[in-house]
Length: 425
Image 1: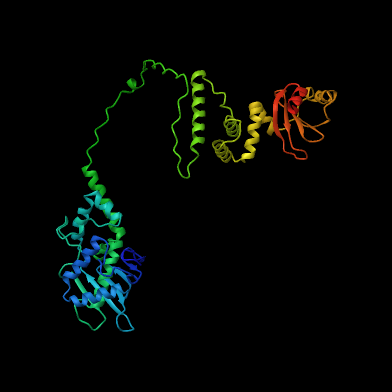
Image 2: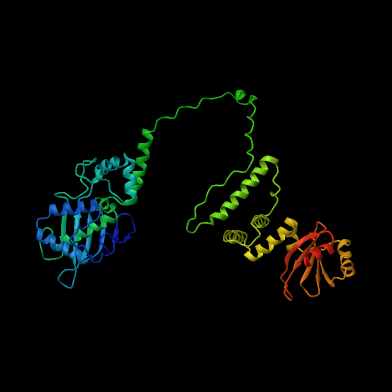
């Protein structure tokens, strides 16, 4: 564990007993400050001031640095741990500290609750200077003073303190680093009880300092329900002649393609402008998939640039389709818009009439034989296909020989012969 590491605490059955795991030896910087926090260092300074034997204090610090102190148990007025010395059996070291009286705690809690920053600091496991300094707001000393400490150890050394108790004192400073409530527990109160009492007193202070809310003026019911005549709304602002330019989108790691976002923003601006000028949005009835296909189809048709490929990936991902599905749907949209996409994706059973007359008409024009299936007419070799749409037009499709991979081709026509001629042309 590094010098600034926090020992793990095992909570006891109540809020007044806490046991902390043994802290391993310090790996480096043994000559530096033993504690990281200012209040932990203040604890060490107080102990060094009270110690009657600097030699024993130095040996105690060496024991603490070497990881000789076992688990530490803290209860009100008492800190206990076993310390491994020169003999195989560890010594029981104990440090007793005078606890505060009820009136002392009232003074401390009132001072802490009077300033919201004190409660916030304690919740963040920090100790405000004014609550622990000798000349602080409370007039009390949280740190040990003459007559506060009563060390005891099972070793034969009668020094004050012995090196085992000194080691325990130094390790206690590391406990205070991670949790200043350990010092308050030594003085007699547990963390849960203190926070509840601080919250209550802080609320009382806030209520006393809060200005009284002035009474709201009352309004007679007849006046409140009387008719109001509001002035007419101002005329709307004139619609600009062209859609606005979208903002520039920076290229950021992990973000969406900026050029794809630019295209989507430009499309949204154009739709908004059309809605303002005509009062109608012809695209409002499109599904998410249809709108994604429409957006992709608006890109240039001469090859897929890097920007277009990025847009295709974004749209395919957003709709749960593959880029191949999207490319095929784009071809259908360019062939016949929303109806072309419907022809691609939804077979249907056309009524008797134009569909039934198409086969003999194609045979009379010397076209190969076509096999019907629902609204499809497919030639025997399997490379050409006509699909009949709800708009009574014929849509041409083409596939490689022996493959059932149909792609929209050519312009649809109400005449099957003209549609097939365009497909073969």
